[in-house]
Image (cartoon, rainbow, N blue to C red; front, top):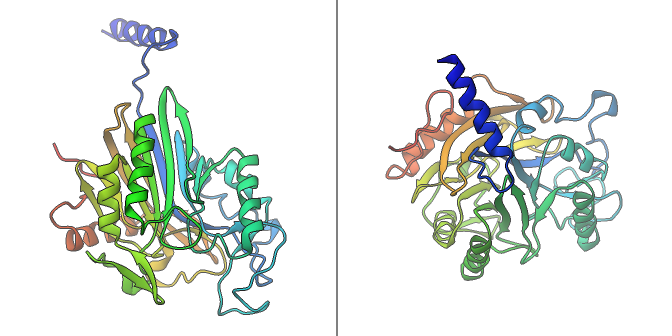
Length: 346
């Protein structure tokens, strides 16, 4: 029996090596929420060089996927000024990371990053352009400005990534007709369409997901349930949300997974990480080459020491998401086991 099994395995490897032969290995996608690796503004909010990158302890967890994606909350830009805050203000939040941190993001394995958020424009259009250039130089695809998306082919499977936000010069999550058109067009040319959305209200008070339009500080932040469902109807295969800086529910809609907030992943120095705000997750999902999700789990993380992420062995983020899903999306909740593994319907 061992000989037969070994022979079968050898024949399979030979088949996969034949040009044009189908490769049935799953496509593994990992996704995280908000990333801000430290800011020039104001002074004193960059991690000391001798301590190394804030990602160094978490890299093995995000390096091993076919595609790893997240939201870059701010700019990669060594110069530039902001009109949003006074130079030394601690009560105003703008984010400008050193350009060299682009290498850190590539080393961590990021393939796609969202630039569709409320901090990409903190230091003006020149820093937006510089951020795009830095990511290009480090082989990281991005989506942010209206009409932009990234694309990659893995083992013959064409994968598209597009990011949306409710404000600024971005693909708009408020203009649903245009968003549907963008996603539908990508679906025609790709096997998998991954949608990132930065939206919803913020903070502990925004943990529960409303079935209505949300506002924060007087700004319209979108109807996250409506947006997500319509993007799936248009052809999206996965919706990854972030922006509330806190956990939110998950659901399965027409067999597609919607994660309404992956919260903070690696946010150094300037983020409020008190209480549940310090928890985040790495979403780990697998798809077959037809775009069907076949496995999934939430790997909980916790930020310590001003925002350095570590794996949380107590699975607190996934426990929180499971309870929120039961409360806020009871009809279509995505149920999780104690270790964060997604229970898929039969």
